[in-house]
Length: 281
Length: 244
Image 1 (cartoon, rainbow over the protein chains, first blue to last red):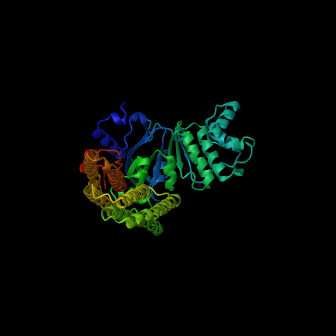
Image 2: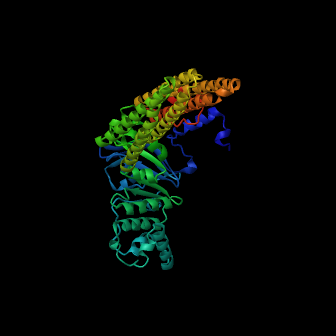
Image 3: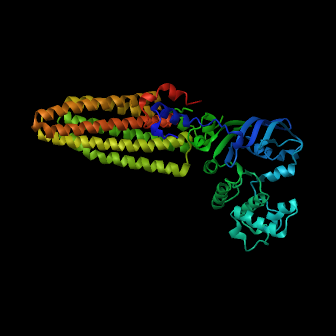
């Protein structure tokens, strides 16, 4: 590979100027974790997502941003079929996880949700001990020895950067933890069943700034092992933790690009207006 | 996406609009002062006015103070607003532009100090034609660079970038002709060197004006064109990289 200085000058200019056009997001099939094709979703008669097509890259953090009601949480929930519980929802279009249609009748929803875990805005630990919270999914799967469960619980709590804070009181109630610890416990509970994708819906919006930074640092450390998708109202958070950002407005995908590009020179005025605090219109 | 000069006044937070407007206003005020410094420095030589030259040297402190103040304001906006996209580019462009204006101020005071020596030494007007020509050229560049900043006018900024090459070649040819003076008459070496320092300072002013123009392109189009040959930067290339 030649270095910049060896390129003909014209090419150098093209390369530099071309950099800012990185907003077209094309990932190869191998780099794609979730492939969303022409997804339209309506609640009752109301369309929440309009013909969305985007690819979410593997082992990267992708953030969905947009004003309230833009469809970002709806899109996130569609990725592990949470809308199945709602009979009012109608859907067109496909979502492929590693090349397989998640709506294929042969797909077991429980298994899909193990592979695509989800963490919500308010920490929701179960009313049981710290240990039992993390072991819950493992016991549900069955067939694991007590020893094996111990190991996985420790591994999951370490992965969620909570182990050092709770290792002496694993039998204490999960409710005795602080909000930030509870949120990391919920992440540990999700990690225990070894998901491939972690969906995070405003995971830090109820937390204080220090707990928020811990969650953000956790997201960074999980990236080599997982594909992460984050919904957030906090644009600085999207800018800090994500590799790619998708801006949604009125159920449409407005702009999707590398976070560096989107936050320094977005392609479209609507994106610029939103991320800089102007009326989107 | 290109932005326009009123882009920064459309935030939901009017206070933020105000802060960004202030940055631009203060940068323009600094630009005005620096422009006058260069003009006065050159006039002090051409009109043999060493009192004016001393005032230019004294005024450099005011230029420095303005840079510190603008830097302070930019730091505050960065810390409190965490600007993104065109707002971030504006703050960065203003910080960089203030630094180039401060350096132009230094060059003006360099010109004035040399003018004091030349005027006091009563050395005649050798090289004044070259100083007049190049100074008019770089002052024109400065004015256009500041105007392009005020109006977010990338076409005018591109003209400044292209103009800089012409100033550089004028400077080279002035240097060659002054060198012949020195070879012909050894007694002229000292005063001609003084003129050469002044021309060198003016050429640097042109370079800084060129930088200001590059920041305008960055600010408006999000394109960093530093260190790219202007011949490789045609309007078409700049245009097709933006989508509205």
